[in-house]
Length: 273
Length: 340
Image (cartoon, rainbow over all chains, first blue to last red; front, side):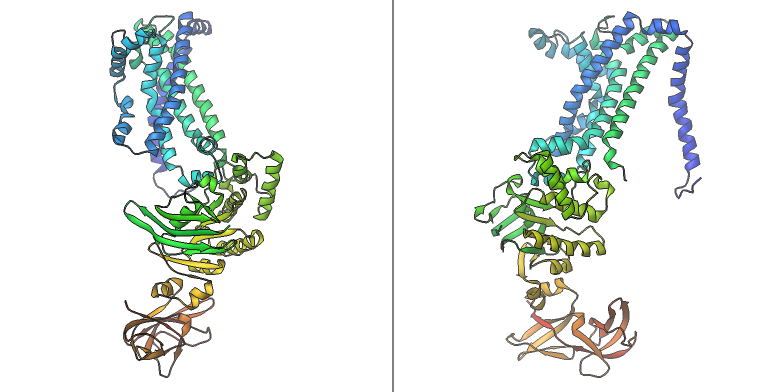
């Protein structure tokens, strides 16, 4: 092996790999093992039951909706926080992390209180004929809340490091604001946006605490996959719980792989020839 | 395009970066703004570009008042110190950027042909498909210049264009920029803190200090006739000796030179290392050698005068001098400035 000037590689590598194995790989392996103890027929029957399919549908669609919303709103928030200094800037910047810090159940209760038919928002929206609590829309709002920091916090540092001379150069070459944003800034933010999107989507897929209060949890319509897994556990049906969980796991893996691939494509220009 | 700055003032927060600067640059001229950091030279360049707005005063391009024209409509080409190439675009895409975002729509074939022409002009044929991270610093600077020239600017502005490059690359690029300038004849203004670069490259040098112009002229004028001790010191190494002016003569540490028309009183005498010589007999400034530095083009001698003042001068490579030798320093020529 090539000699390295920095000391301690074997020890630190050993400790960290052991830890990753213990805390990440082992539980996942146990999950796969449990699910695999079902026969293929039973497995298929459980994961493709109409109740499970309905839960995938509402979970994935809500997560997609929340992620797309966060993509735009998170980018706008990161933009404002890096480009402008205004009174209360520090407070807004700190509040972005609140969904991370707050126990998700607290967020869920707060959102439910706001959006029930006699809550502050719910009563107004109810008059307009929009029902949020106990509908998929409520699920989406809870997901938006808990996964917003991911996009903001991945985009913000990249935006801060963006050399202002790039925009000045583009201006001096006659580019309009929109052309500069689309052709210079956005391509440079794309890798960070993709990273934020994949984290945000993965978090929304697995969110539980914030959603179950506002969702209403009607099987076939507002029951999310995480809750279905929980119900199977309550029924001591560990194999079924593991089987459904494995579907979530695969979806998350697929999403991570896809965004990693897109990221490496977006970063092709950094490869030295 | 002739550029005229008329009593321009710029203040940042409380710092007066540019104080009442008036300057004319003739059409087709190559002018250097030379000054130490904080002298306001870059701020002036950025105001000419439209990247900063002047607080007071006006900037004219030809007969047009350009003071309030935004940078994207001003028709200037700007080359940044650290190139500011778009890292996600290839060299060719960088050069084509200005033509692609222009309000004047161009055929793709016309853009490609122009990019090929510019790549040839900056001698980077065959590198059009590389990304900026894949080429050297000198090549990046040439791409930056090609990109700025692609939009047919009326004025070319360069901010410390060679500041981030090796000495050898700098020298080559300097000669090359001079060639491009005489080929295109475009009015060019560049900023530098390197006096050698300014003197080598420019038709005219504008020397700035604390946001004001202290002297301007051809390299010959400013070198041969510096008007102040600041300009004398800033343009090159200089020995400083305390002097006294009496009856049209300046006396310093045993040397005396003619100064006509100076009032009597305390003064400082400035002499370039090449203007001093070493001899074993007087008259001259009695001194002893403390160190000899051998360089590719001669020997630099460091000496201490009897008065304790440090002196530096050059002798021919064959000259036998060594630390500890005693002798006399003679003055071939010098400049005397009265102490304010």
